[in-house]
Length: 484
Ligand code: SAH
Ligand code: F3S
Image (cartoon, rainbow, N blue to C red; front, side, top):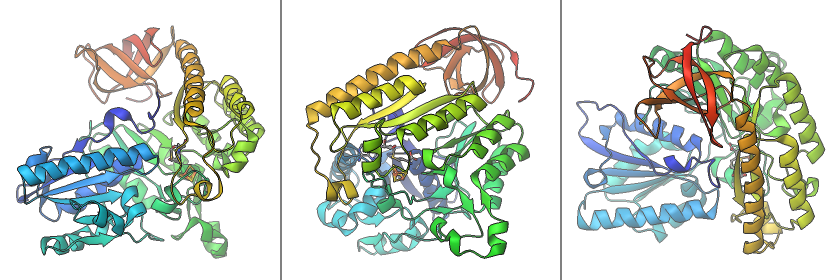
């Protein structure tokens, strides 16, 4: 279960889109890390489609190879370094004309060092500089290395309509905020993705309308901290206090944005990720309860069950405040599914702190979880001020104990659906059999059932008869009346 946040099955996927006939050059683009990176790669592919590039899945024939990288844990960076070696071998033996660019969080974190350390790399581009890629490519074509890692106060790529790479045509991501202001002491994101800013609501709604017209049925609104969304005419979240009275009066927060999306597109299903407990307010939960088409699922990372560790992590809530939030969520939406992120072995974590995390799992009863052992990241406050003092084997044992409890609870939680009829959006063939569809219910649990005459994009009512810890098994009983 570890590392699932970052869906393991998708890591390193290379992506393709429909080809433009007039385009002569070939782009191989590969993505690692969070959903935001995958969404950003779609923005980049869209920019390059206007520069003469079609995407390819064959590395050996690429003129340009781009890798969108992740810095969240050391392991993520090691994976990318290995890929660069692989590109190097292909360039040396098969495809000498190939140029290589590094995008994303590792590009931002390492900057020029990348060009020095990895001879294969021709171009380094940070997450806010993708519009500069056409200029940077000109430098590269002239034989010079090129770099732009400037972080922006405004960039949200609102004016770029992303192409959908290797899409199922049914579900899509739409980013609504960029950057993060929270400065959790373990986290590299504020350094690699800059200050938090929100995207203009009109451009979000336009992108959703475009997806709807193309037959998409589910949108996940994306941000490092979506609940903190705040549009007041542009600018950084932290500068909101300096906004005019008019700007403040006409500002749009996350609850309002979500309400508008769900109202305007009543047959489109909405999800969002990620929620930070400190910014998740009752208004958002009430909007969720009001709309059938907003899924009953909240990813609510907690990181630790110990108030002392939460304070060391600079998370802005206690164990008790988190529990109160969870109580409120279950009270307003009894049928909700919650999932977590947890870090085992943060500096100074004692057995008692660890027990607090285990008991919190029992209290909240999450359906899913994404659990990691602490990985010190250069430049973060924890790396500068705290010693990484929990021995590796202790981290590993604690992580395993957390995973074990979470898996037991997951199975118990998933079983609650047996006997129920749930609404499923059909996405694709099930992994096990091409005679079965796979989709997800509102709570984001995977459901498989015999195909009959249903097709991808249909909302189908499925009666559940059995389950494994993560998958529900059932049979269709008809179309959803509300969503079709
Ligand atoms: N708000 C973000 C969080 C990004 S990081 C989001 O949109 O999901 C995702 C998860 O990685 C975090 O919640 C945390 O549990 C984990 N993580 C972050 N930094 C880490 C580190 N240094 N070591 C281990 N896990 C870490
Ligand atoms: Fe990282 Fe904390 Fe932001 S985990 S992305 S600094 S909310």
